[in-house]
Length: 98
Length: 484
Image (tube, rainbow over all chains, first blue to last red; front, top):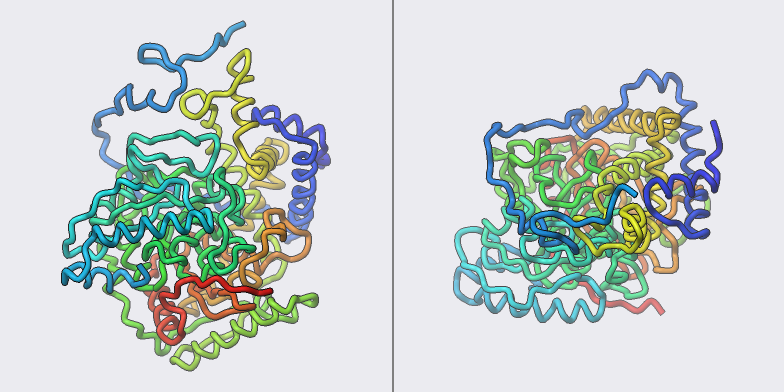
């Protein structure tokens, strides 16, 4: 198992589009060390790999589906009301292709 | 505002008080509490009085945690990323409260997006404990707990992914109840970790908690995890009959022998818990000590962090600053998003995102994420086995009263954290779970938690109600204490 390094923390942060200070990077590594030790203990549980991972409370994530009926969509004005920069009925973003 | 919902309703119906008077009092108290404890993101000064009907909540003011979407009202999740966000729709649970005639007077501060347990990561600053301003309220429903304890209104809503209703309730000397997963629709509440997110209520009595959740709950076309609970009437079902009920507590969590370096506060807290166990017996319940493998218990905190960080990383990827939020600066959209996310997320959230991302990488997923989910199942299975023989599990909340602000509690510690973190099992399994105050340590309130099997909310509430009726902490209002 490769160790979680400072370089990796910075790489993941970069992929997540967040910047971390040196102090924050150290805190990630310190916290992760505790998790890693606990995960080592978990890995020692006999036959753990045979247990089905529990992905959801109550073991199901669908209790209720609505009828497939057309509903009124939110208005474009409503949707754009929290956007800082829009043009006509669209969100305005800087040029994507450089 | 220091009365229960039932009492306020009677006063309103008999005409001894008007909704307008209650709202005025609540708004005045909101301002006082804001000045002293910093509990709110928004106070709705212009709110109109509500009609008084047969509904117990009609005309009575309440507070909503700021991660509930409120149409036309600022909803920030206590994050700078959404500091100006005004939704154009209501969360279903809020809509249900409005239908009951309830009157919203403020939005309460919380740990940013619910991802914290201290009340110190709100974009408006830390929420102070109304019993002692040098201490925290815990989180993430910090403002809701503070306001209810301080007597702003009889109830506020909360959300609970780890223990975010039930621990602040204990630290503030009030009741915190999260019902079975899916009883209340999550639609319109900002998601944190969807597989463990619950909604619920913070109140000053068990019956009030039942009244509020009765009003919030219901199947919802907009939440596929919601289920039909129309035949469950929580408030009407509370009768306090607990003779012959069987409870258990877990030795590895409750026995002082597990904590060789226990502080005086922890010793007193566990002694107080033992008194509550004696009280359970005195009112006709059987209580037994049970054992659970310590390796599993010690894994709770890490299992929670791994699963919740992974889900949060994904849930919050839509926060780019482009479609909503204050736009970041930069030459291109990547730089703009990075600038927005770096400047506006708190350090706690940022480092949890990194951990969440790491555990989801293909090469790490089985060791971390899948194994955490496997232990989640093992823990839930252990609790379900207990529920085959017992009506509920009773455990102390935390390791004592509210912590001082200078004690760091948002980092995982290397020593055992099981006392602080065991309530998370209630989120792993979706169990109904309620915290009620059960005494004082260092002149500050402490709590006890009762958790039952899924869909058995009435049983859990009844046990809590019977205990509450035989203690003296019902409907208590915080009084600032001086501990020198």
